[in-house]
Image (cartoon, rainbow, N blue to C red; front, side, top):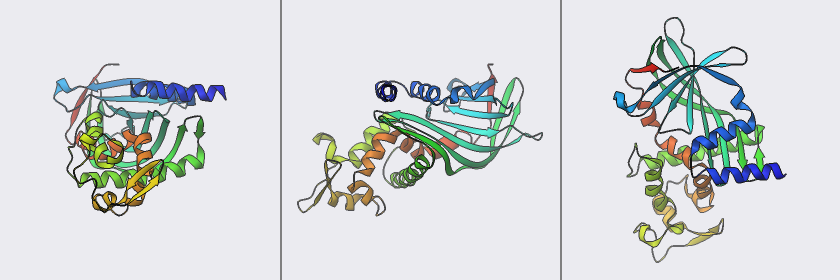
Length: 280
């Protein structure tokens, strides 16, 4: 029990500082950091004229099976995995792996992807998308919430339910006024007052957040303005907000909401051919 509490406290302390620390700690805890090794690494940076630093790693697992992992500097919470290219250079996207933490713990999951691309490897790597990358379904995952760890079917059910809510929220956000391709801090600063005016300071509350005839309902120790909910949110999101579930999603999975909102920009990074330099 002491060990579990230590892990939970460790994540609470380091989350605000750096996702990479959360990622490394999470993988050490569950043993996955020892599953595969990097045998080649290619990189392209913003200095080379692309929008973000991108790493392409060739990895090998303990069964000597190789695959490709793509990492993006601005979105450290996700990694895209593909098959090794065939003789004609064509490869298939296989999964997206998400890992991030919060003051409440951490979330990790793998999601099946569809899509194809071409990849040639030598002293450089020539990378190009042939068919748009499309997320399909979460296939596995783990949740650490304070001193409770959820795995197996329990985690899978909870993560798939949250995925439905997160994608619904991201779609709704995309139809409203908001800036794409922004930092996580700018994203949070813009959307938190819109989503939760009840818990932010008066100076940043939306002007239309409260009318004289608005009704309130209490959930998760907060009085939610149901009138504001009905005026602003789509029908499918209204019960999610009024129950406090939306706030819980925001607090535990902000980076998940962020990458779903930015998904088009993530995919767009690969709309043109990218040349990466071999550094390992």
